[in-house]
Length: 340
Image 1 (cartoon, rainbow, N blue to C red):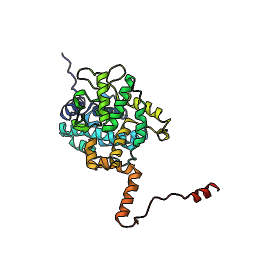
Image 2: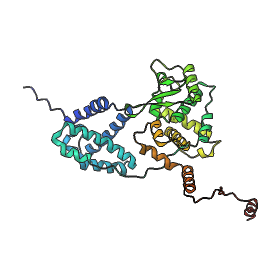
Image 3: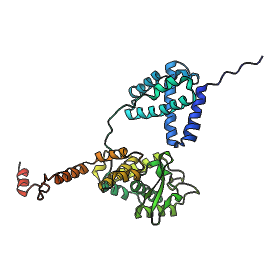
């Protein structure tokens, strides 16, 4: 008498279809997004299995309830030390998965809908960290362009500051994406498979041309390679930037005791554009932001811009006389203060 095969767990099937069909084929999510969603779901299923006292492969769709999701989100902050921002990112991943369950398992639609209604946690968004142009210029002087790696480092950092490109966008650039003659520009592959063009400075185009000429990438390969000729990674970019910032800090005190990540170069590009008077909607398109509200964050990061805006408003309102100028101490006052 043949033994009856156990029924396949529908949860495992839906997890597989979520990543392969929904994220991979329908949404065409980036590898970075897929990894982030994978990690969030993995943490949730492990948490749920421990709470239920069973193995992950023994979990059932009926176990995926809103109470367990709420407990998991609380666990992330209280036990794992995650910030509210990270907690919200995990929730976004779970919402996407539960929406997939809702589409494919209508019998349990009620319990899935309750998860989809969970709100994100409000938190204070800190001011964006950025470098002033003077700081960036010193950092860009650090790579020794007489060496192969120094040539790459200079082209990489200059490109990221010029374009404000995300690390993933930078590492995806291939020779076919570049136009190094007038009009000098690059085609960037952004989030959600969106493509945008970004202008290049003459110096940036020259640095990229020299890099490609002296270190030709493999056929169909990207232009920024590691020391062994392989694909440069996020960690590699972070290491390159940190190394040159550390060297530059001997000249620029403002670079000391600051954590400068590759994304700081993106912030620095945005703030420099704002300081130059570029309209926010133009900066939004330049950086590839989906919403101008994201770009607005940079406005609050620069006290100099606030001060200039206040002075312009005062003049417009007629509250500042034409003869007003910035205050400076007189020589007599300085001598008096020195004598105290």
